[in-house]
Length: 86
Ligand SMILES: [Zn+2]
Image 1 (cartoon, helix red, strand yellow):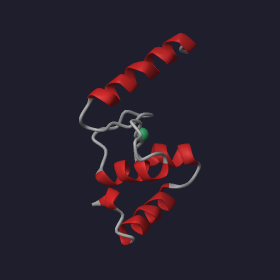
Image 2 (tube, rainbow, N blue to C red):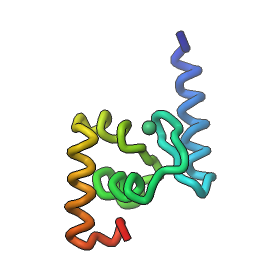
Image 3 (cartoon, protein in one colour):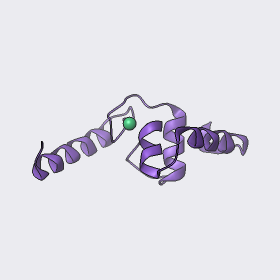
Image 4 (tube, rainbow, N blue to C red):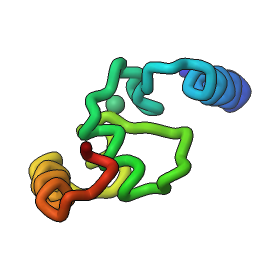
């Protein structure tokens, strides 16, 4: 079990890592590198200027959808020619 303080500390450290690293890393599970699709869909669904990125399975959990739904969304955005997925 970890204390709240430890959790906050870990949170800050991972935020700093995300900001400093060129390669994007999943904010939740630490998966790295993230694919273009994962980065694109995070930007699209969270915020274009987000510094917090999620891998597909963590993003699905965060948004309370399934990975398949996210994959379908990615395809949708690609078909629309969304610039984030180029
Ligand atoms: Zn993850």
